Image (cartoon, rainbow over all chains, first blue to last red):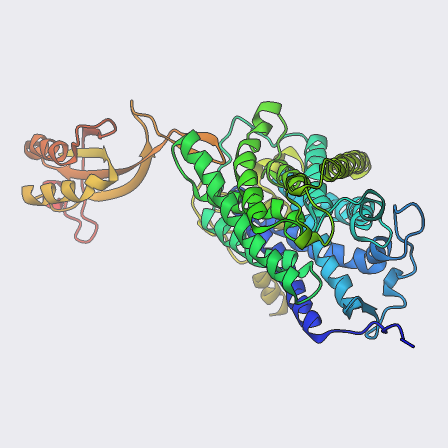
Length: 437
Length: 112
């Protein structure tokens, strides 16, 4: 007689996932620096805030309903989970998901939702009303991120169970949703004042490199953590993540050197991120050779894709479309060619004898997720624009959102042209002291 | 007296300073400046997008000298600042009515 083994927590897996969760959370402040360095001095704090506040907003909405809707039992058709665990009801220290505590799994997944929302802000930099962003992020998380996460990873989600498309760490829910949403939202908002006329050069490239470095560091938690265990698959995903980031970086620099005659710092940071984006869905499904190709393809293609905005006339300020949508699509599609049985445990890509079915499934998943995301985000953007206005006033945008929205400036240069007040004197505390005297 | 103003490439500043010291010029004022003449600025590339930066970095050197020394000073500055390449800068002089040394109140050439 054999007894079915009761689910139990594995301490090694749990220890690794605790660390991985912290790593993924660090990606969002890293993203804040990455984006913050790329905008002009006058709006750097606003850019940092859009990422930072997303941590708080998404956490609240995730604990209230997001986790349950994404990872609760399916309530029909593989489209969405139920509200059984709303408010984390029914989950405690003894709850187990696989070999890790359910509360840890939920927190790990929460960090994915956080950075995905923050990624969207790169497309709408410098001109979005902060109040509108505070409303957009929770709503967007519920109507876009959560359903797509359920389709791909949730119990009974249709992309995983019915279609059988592969996505290891989030090409569809993270990269393609953020990219397609960035495109939709920047179309609703319109371009920044002076788009294609004024130079909008990055104000702090060392900050961009620091941010990219923190992103890369955190990405090991993102990808290797997605194995949900301290095991060989995590190790393979970890190495693939390093490899693809490197070939992405080199691919982007190669294009820049050939095309522009200079290999730039921003290009190195962007290429690494493009490679990491593309390897996200594929890090646990392709071989090391596949990872090198995925990263290189993303570095080369994304470096061309970022110029689309100038040709097609949409102001995706910090290239969320060119890097995350395009990179996410590359990584998700190449799984159909490079998937290896040793990694997936079953599915093989076209190049390994798997036939045309895997690439077709990957393509269908990409098309559906990108279309759904674009349509819903565009509708949500229009709705918010009508209800409360999505765009900052012309004066705010011209002066910079730091001073006009947050009443702060990032740097006290005190020099004309830097956007900081030339001189300031103590107001509030002096008045207070006089009042008390 | 003459105010001689030179706008030159920043990396020629040390040579200009040395040349003026050798001529016996006692003091000078240096300001970081930016601008362009015929050479215009330079091009920067970010993610494949080229940005034309019109204003090139320069230093602006100002000295006040006696009329008799003006030509020698101008020649020294030009010799020291010249690289022969585009963007070497300009030197000009204008008459000065009065100079006062703030510490002592001396006026005119004595204040130089």
